[in-house]
Each structure stands twice: as structure tokens, then as C-alpha cells.
Length: 60
Image (cartoon, rainbow, N blue to C red):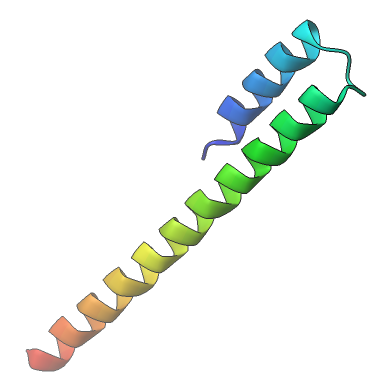
């Protein structure tokens, strides 16, 4: 979902900074960490929705 944004940012960062520089590596780690957090949040929301929908079906 957000991969294209990360790819664009990485390309911009690589254009501005040599690929092996600590700043570029740190930026990539930060972006990966942010993506993992978003994925965890989305997974949690999906589980909550699934539980809520499952609960609603049982009440019917």
C-alpha cells in the first residue's frame, strides 16, 4: 500500500546522498521501521474488525 511512497523517498534520498552513507542507511532503516509499524497497526485493525463482525453475526 505504501511501498510506492517509500520507493520514491528512497530514490530521492539516494539521489541526494551516496548509497553507502550512514545517513542513507539510517533513512532506510527509519522508513522500514515506519512501514512495519503501519503494517502492525493495519493488522491490529483488521483483527479488531474481524472480531467485531464475527461478534455481530453471533448476535443476529
